[in-house]
Image 1 (cartoon, rainbow, N blue to C red):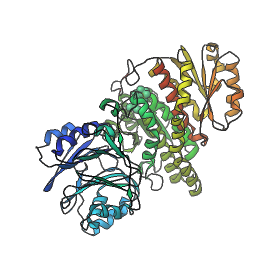
Image 2: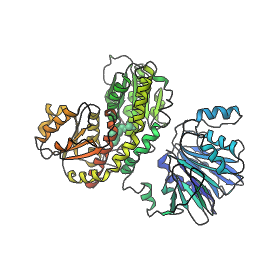
Image 3: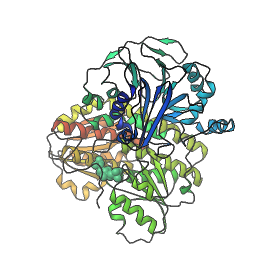
Image 4: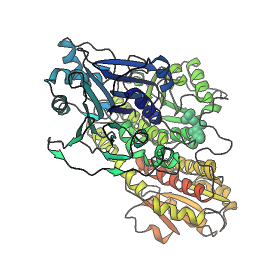
Length: 595
Ligand code: M6R
């Protein structure tokens, strides 16, 4: 995720752009830039947060400009990879939020034509394509280029020869237009507009819009005019930053379909060149907290999809264990990339002669500097202390890794790889169905919110999900919760089960189903109320449990992705019912930089 903003009107553009960019910083903050038009384009960029950019900015008088705050995907965070970009003529500027999948082929052709690139980004190819297509009408040039590119985008462009005009277009990346009097603007999200106007128009997928100070024109994908009524936003700026949600955690839970889509983008058809995977014959996954639960799921994913032996280990324990297991590929998972235990484990793995790969959400983190290679999730900034969208993005990264390994090792045939890939592509829709079911989960949470203890049970790939469900419940609602492998209860913890201890059972219809039903019977017989998370269409389920949360059918190995979203919502609504400080739970920090 990145944030883009643009303004055209009577006022100086720069202060408006900077204020708006600060409201978008949650979408990315590894570098930022602005371009302002005042007869000619003036461009300023800086690595780091918006205030780093502010520190290097002179006063710029123009009344039209574009700004960008970046979360790197292609090309490291740096001043030269920061947006916007200005073309070879110095007259055209462009900023982008998204990923261009087929940038490689265009780049070769553009270089052969003599275009000068100033960055390693995928975005810059679009700039030079528009430069080539430009014949005095910016929207026409952009429309011609849109048909040639694949991927997700929200683009913002301006051209010095059309000095009052901004052109924007979107597909699979958000964009909102703000309507003022004698001024108009746009941004990736509503909060960035609210200092100027509360009158907004949402741009839809495939649409393009032209903004001048006097008017906003929207065009459908076929170029025809779109007549859409503006909406008036009633949120204040603070509400708007949370997208109208009462907490960042809930907003982040709801962002998961977009995040899964973004993390998959361009990686299924054209696998990243993860050289480090060559020759790997065993994988050790190392992480802490929620990321450790991703590692535990990763073991099942890698063994099932890639047929490669894998194990998961707590980073804080990794360095103390004696080793007799050679030199596996060590995959360190950390959303922040700053967790001291995980960084320590990466160092230790290298000391033992292993190759190391990071799965992280931060391109320029300490962990990425420590390891040999990195695979980035694309979850954007997560503000809630409880990890939600970064966790599902980690699972998606692990599916990508497993597919890549399976293909490399020859354990997956092209047909099998295609089948797995098609099913992964369906995950954003499946997760959307789970978040759409939030009201039912909220009602259920109300019923159980005052309990003291809870158990979560699952088997196989959903055993780690039981642990994650309990982890989420503990950290934000302060209910004592335990995640158990369902088959293990009878070896001890069953002694704690009473009618006062609700049990949440993860019940996908897979090879563990009948055994899980047996375990549900064990706890029901002790009086425990049972909530099942099960598939839509599983008619059997109601016979065995007291309540059900339905999730769409997905292949068992993908079920953690849908199940965890239901678990996150259950924890969230329980915490809300108990009046807890959800985004900042007591005693916890978002990033743990001590061992
Ligand atoms: O940034 P990391 O993924 O390395 O963080 C690891 C844990 O500290 C983190 O997952 C923690 O458990 C969260 N509070 C989970 O919600």
